[in-house]
Image 1 (spheres, one colour):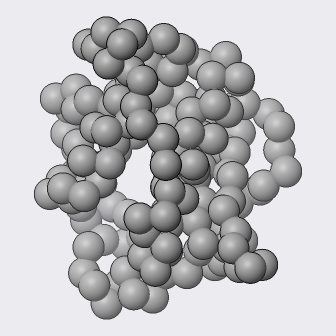
Image 2 (cartoon, rainbow, N blue to C red; image 1 turned 120 degrees about the vertical axis):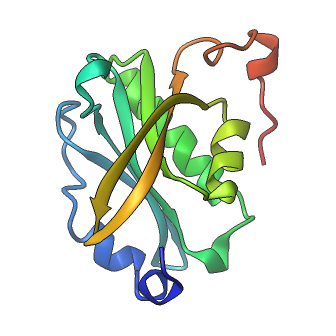
Length: 155
């Protein structure tokens, strides 16, 4: 996505669009990270929208203000999102990553997600983008990995 577009995004503006109080696992659920009273990141989940992934949860948004990268906020948010999906009865989850976003691909791979070969063209906030789908198990070892390999270091 163009830098000028990304530069205008603010977590507070995005979070205002979400219903944060719903405990219904069939509705989107958002958890926020705050520091000194300001929202610095959020993660949103919902049942997977892909027709071939019936029964999956979806991590549909994860954002951390770039000024707060490398502080464990993204790790905490994705862990909270996975925990919510698992507690809501989902055993597996999916997410979509912008093609070529190597930072996000590395982040999700380190968390046990793996590309499943599915690609799509989508319109995100008015921009046409190419995306790659990732999936993982929520209970037990991530797909294709042993239980020992699923013990990732925590920040």
